[in-house]
Amino acid sequence: MADSKRYISQTELENHKKPGDLWISIQGKIYDVTEWSRDHPGGALPLLNLAGQDATDAFVAYHPGLAWQYLDKFFTGYYLKDYSVSEVSKDFRKLAAEFSKMGLFEKKEHGTGILLCIIALLFSISVYGVLCSNSALVHLLSGALLGFSWIQSGWIGHDSGHYQVMSSRKFNRVAQILTGNCLAGISIGWWKWNHNAHHIACNSLEFDPDLQHMPIFAVSSKLFNSLTSYFYERKMNFDSIARFLVSYQHWTFYPVMCFARINLFAQSFLFLFSKRKVPNRGQEILGILVYWTWFPLLVSCLPNWGERLMFVVASFAVTGIQHVQFCLNHFSSSVYVGPPSGNNWFEKQTDGTLDIVCSSWMDWFHGGLQFQIEHHLFPRLPRCHLRKVSPFVQELCKKHNLQYDTASFWKANVMTIETLRSAALQARILSNPVPKNLVWEAVNTHG
Image 1 (cartoon, rainbow, N blue to C red):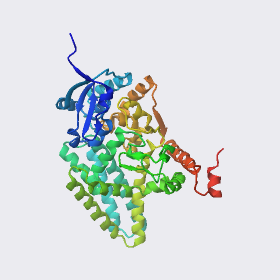
Image 2: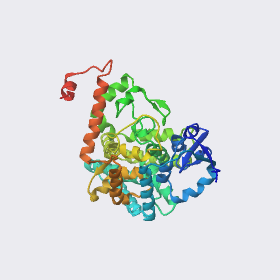
Image 3: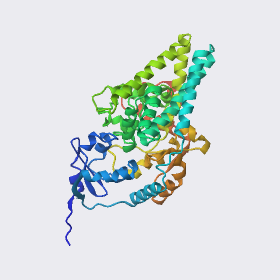
Image 4: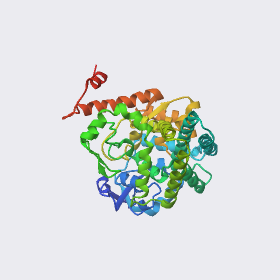
């Protein structure tokens, strides 16, 4: 009996990967997601980045089983010619199905309610210390406690962007706005837009915004070619200013991390007041206004400008710990130039990610980022299960001879600085180098 199915080749599918014409393949069936990209909960960018190719593994990672029933309305009637599945992808999909059968995606046991109470307690103690004490030391500790509350609110924002941490979507949204916009001054909408792009294009120098920090940082000399950021839609020029800053990046990394929140504030404002479609823009802006009301008022209650500056610096610097943590998982891992590929999606996630080895009693400190490989492969998995599934992921990587990189927190910091230093040295030896001095030469001598 003749096959009545209609087929298109991979080459023909690749013709449909531009705005206004987005086709993807999922399990060999071709779907037109052009219209859906406007309403896609994850934004249009993931669909644009994976258009023109098979996106089955990414779809499995990001969507619950219920999402499959909605695919038919986007079906074009075409199938992908010579569609095949790699052994790695087969095992990945089996593992995802097994976790689903175990109910791991639905069992959220990490106590968001308790964490919210801890955040409220830290915040209250910080405010009490400012309003009810005349001690400069107490004011310094109050700033530090506020920073710790921001760190914990960051974990809730991160988790709630991947899966529902509360009992309903409505309460999930309330938790996002309260802990993100109102408490921390960071738009949860911007965070989801940025973070989804990072996950889809993990460690692509052109598509992953988490590696696009020019002119301050460059994790690879490939960035010296003034690559284009397809996320920010601009060229990342490696000019004389960038070369100078990158040349010292292994020294400036930690100081910059202490004030990295300023960049998040700026990105939030740029996002919310841009022309792009922003879901619940009014809620987001109102939440940001709440932050920029209570925080300046609290700082103004301190007795003098010296203590006000000390309070702000302490709160920002403590939160810098979290910014360092975000960098440790990726800065020292493999990078590549070009768009993400659905055909080796699993391999790209493991190549570009580093796990942090720690005891279970330290899980609160890392907020799930210590199992970054597992998180990137199964982003919908609540972080309370990441330690449980880690052995299965390690076994799969070992079976297929794939990277599964781990390091202690200290070693990860060393690896990150070594990566930055390597790029800094390469920036120094380019044509028209920045003038050197004897101190620099002594510290950076090879051998």
